[in-house]
Length: 311
Image (cartoon, rainbow, N blue to C red; front, side, top):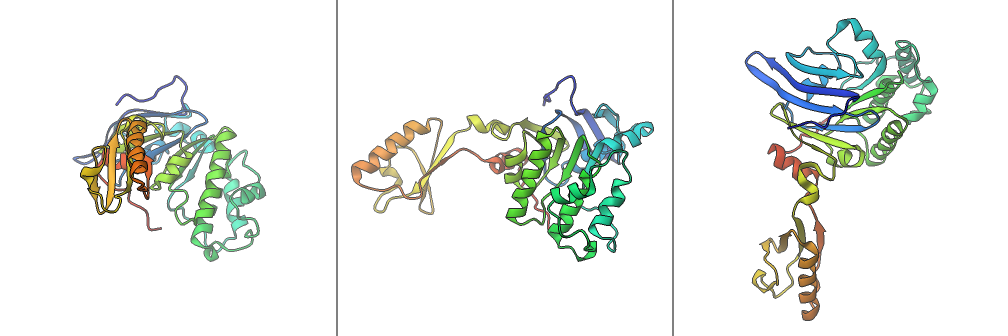
């Protein structure tokens, strides 16, 4: 599909290709990430998502196509240090010394950058204040993930890669992390996010792309991806006692006592249904009106459910 393109994007990927032997993992993927936006790249395992990210991060060489990250070709080893100075990585698994304290770990990584953020500021940002003297090996899974996030932020990156950033977080910690990511975006940091939580993509992303079979199969805002904004609405309610689907004033499907009406004109359909119910004195229990959510769109585009990490 034709990517969203501007002349000066933070990330440009055009016709990216990568094979391992006879298997072509990435097959002409194209997309861009604009400066100062949160961009979510979604896809099932084996779709080419991880390979694409590794190429963008400079860890893997591409076979063909154009790739630019902050105006730098990540495959250009001569500019490798320059690229590393300007990006931050929060990977699914980051190797850290278990016997160092939280503060020692972050301070050591700060030494790799010319202009790092203040260590105590970063500790506070990721909600590890009070844990500075604890050894890494004693941290909970959620605290270790916050430490991973701190290591990605300490270099004050222009572009932050977040790979499953809130895996292992409880709901409150996840929402706090979302607020932090939004704050980074509002301060000018570009964020490229991967996640298996559809709510996370919905809450955070300015734009979303879905990769399947090594190609970008859809791209747009969370509300328009895959035609969500123009999709038929779904009206659902419990079938009133003593009624059959044939008694309803609109065409409907019935499954386990729950009625589903799909329509391009939800206001008109609701008018008929509620008028019918009021005339009969019959409540429409469990009444909801919605359009396909991100998970519905994802399933339609990929034919596969999201694989949730067991970290």
